Length: 239
Ligand SMILES: Nc1ncnc2c1ncn2[C@@H]1O[C@H](COP(=O)(O)OP(=O)(O)OP(=O)(O)O)[C@@H](O)[C@H]1O
Image 1 (cartoon, helix red, strand yellow):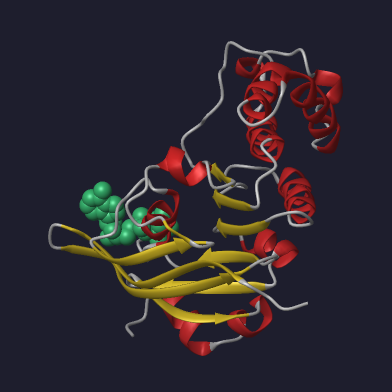
Image 2 (image 1 turned 90 degrees about the horizontal axis):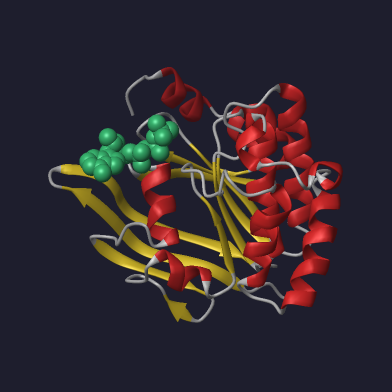
């Protein structure tokens, strides 16, 4: 199967006044990939992620998703291209049930009947079927994250962008999240910003390492974790 480029940035830069958060980032993601973005604090991962989602407009360079130039798009315009986005800011309605939250997400793109079927299936996939009537406000942190993943899945996206999906989870919750993400990858490509190395090892094929706003290296986790330059960067040595 020939692989197509699904996401491409060219010479992307994001400056906040004098702060250079991203510089000369030329990045590609092929259809079907599951890519993790890693790097030490302040490396520019979240800023780059926000340039992909439309939360930020890059100072320079371009972003393409499929055949569409999304450089100046707002998040809702990016979402309309079949992109599921989970940011670090919660996106759930606390006063509604799990089922209602997921249904609302499915209903944005599908008929009421189809949305009902998708909601049922998705809640089984994330193992929240038995809790479907429970109010989201009453859930534990990990379960809330899964509701958000279910909302992303219910829209049946072709590309999923996740910012730290395992943040604050227990080891067991992290492993289940990794399982869910591999399942999402059966039908969608993914870009995930993540800190948790065990989680990354459990899911990633290819990893992109950011350092000082730029891409330092791209390879498998095995190669990256053995690389002396990457080790130095994480330990805070100068490069
Ligand atoms: N809105 C902003 N205004 C000013 N500076 C910013 C803004 N957002 C990010 N920065 C700066 O840009 C740089 C990159 O930050 P960014 O959050 O993208 O890094 P990160 O790799 O995601 O870090 P972390 O792992 O800590 O989340 C940092 O120096 C940060 O202080």
